[in-house]
Image (cartoon, rainbow, N blue to C red; front, side, top):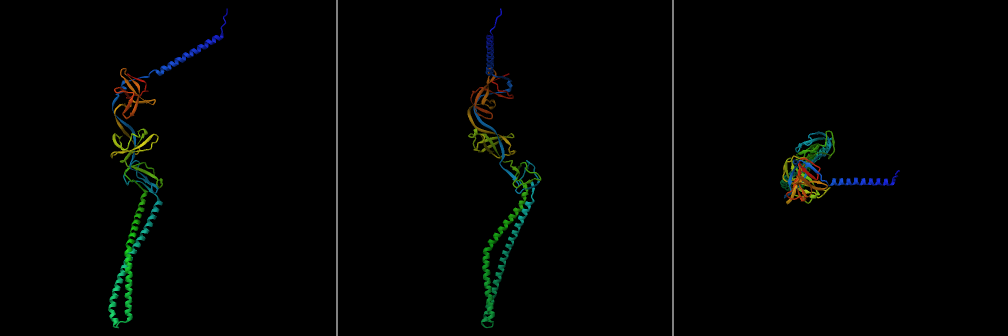
Amino acid sequence: MDIQLDKKNTAHHLAKGIVALALIIFSLLCLYLFMLFTTEKVTRIPATSVTLHSVKIGTFTDTLVTRAVAIPSESVIITSECGGIVTKIHQNASSNVKKGDVIAQLSNDDFILQVTSRIADTTEQLNNLRNIRRLLEKDKLDTHLDLQDAHYQVEKRNKEARRKKTLYERGIMEKASYEQLLDELAYWKKRDAILTLYQQRQANRLPSQLAEIDSSLAHLEKLTKQTEKSLEKLTISAPIDGVLSPLAIKIGQQVKPGEKIASIDNPHSYYFEASFSEYYLDKIKPNDSVTGHYAGIDIPLTISSISSVVENGKFIVKLTLTRPQPLSLKRGQSIDLRVSLGTIQHALHIPSKAIFVTEEKSWVYLIDEKNRRAMKTPVVIKRQGETQSEVVSGLSAGQHVVVFTDIHIDKPDIIEFE
């Protein structure tokens, strides 16, 4: 006897089986993910690749480490005053030069003609003033001689008039001759009076006139020398001792007036600039002592000024040498800078190298001495210096933290030591 199956019941059981299978697969996946996220990540490393440091309570020096850029205190930009064509270059870039050393030579025919013309005009004015001075002195001499002659003639005719007066009164001398003698005496007396008055006026005016002329002559002579010296503008020389920057000229180049030729930095006079985060704006103060480090030597520095402008979260600090000392630096070269921000007594501190940051949190590896392993432990750091950091929570005095020496790992939850 044939059995007839119900097709609807068969399809219904098949659907239930598929749903049950899907639920089982989903449950297994969730279990896997739960185990994946809850299982601690363990990494085994050699014990020789780490060092252990104690968590201590003691004096903590808050030190900030950064870089400072050297800037010459004395730096001179060399430009061409008159311009011209570069005919010769005497110095190389970055060479040490002394004051007065010739750097380059220029040629400028138009400038030379202008200078020559000015010298000729000034020389003509000098000659004119010298001629005027000679004429005034000659006039003084002539007046003096004429006055002497007038004195002589007056005296001569006075004596003659006294002698001939008796002859005239006796009728021996003609009246016309005697009157002519008196007229000549009156003429010379009048001439003597005029010359005397002119000499007096001349004596009052002449010294100031000569002084003005002498002053003008001195000014023109100085101007002539300056004009002649202006030809030296075609010779570019070092104004100070120092290090020459790379030259911005080549032989045959046309240099414009005011165009930069080079610059000279005084290698024995520097100040430094460093930028700090605005977080330290109230912690760094003028006149604070700072230590720079360069070429194996410590450089005592003093904060001379602090910029009041904060740009992009940073402000600029200017530092100067506490005492003069020779430094073989160049413009823009940087030095290490250590800034002490203060000392704290009885602070809980650990080595800064023991701290690492992930997910915007600070962590350390805390030693579990019983199980010979280290646990990834969150900590709160208040101040982090170059070598030490102050811990405010997460650790206790006497515990030990790990500092890796020569390996880098992906920061697992647990480190086991082999």
